[in-house]
Image (tube, rainbow, N blue to C red; front, side, top):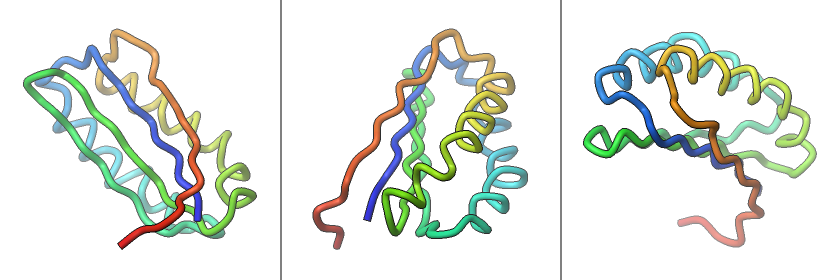
Length: 98
């Protein structure tokens, strides 16, 4: 299993709820249709103006096949959230998950 972690800082706290709602309504249904998609975790720290999203994929190829789509979704979220910094994106192989 593999994961893509996208992290943002410098987010206006008042924009986080709308950003998460738009992700759930617009991006999540598209992600769920992608080959190998195995879930997502979305986290926010409103006081610090931070957010993170981790998507899970059955294989590295499944994850890499959605790189462009993920970039588009991040750009949409950055626009809605009015992000002041670029996101940090990391890719991981998951050794175990309980």
